[in-house]
Image (cartoon, rainbow, N blue to C red; front, side, top):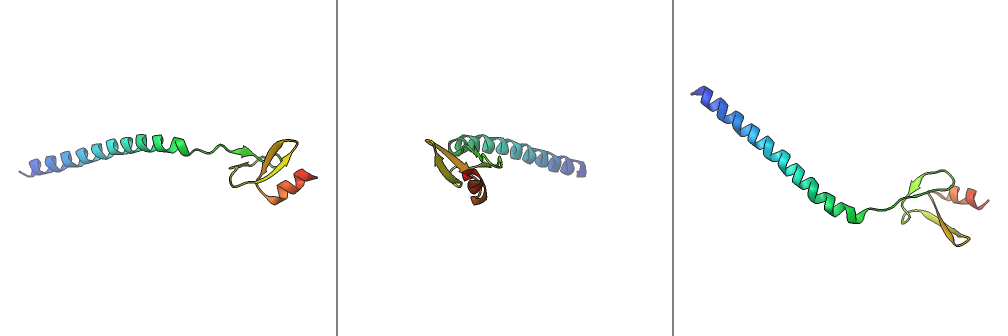
Length: 80
């Protein structure tokens, strides 16, 4: 009788673990589809080489080209 109870509990634990893995895989596949639309291309700061998001970076237009900087210090160094 005890052996049957232990086997039943073990089967339930294994089944729950299996379904959690499957649920995680499906959740990951769903979030991958949503995340691809919101990806932001990073640009490189020409002074220090740090990658920054253009929406959060400081910018400077020179010669018809826009350059993006991580800080005011890098932008000032570029101007000189």
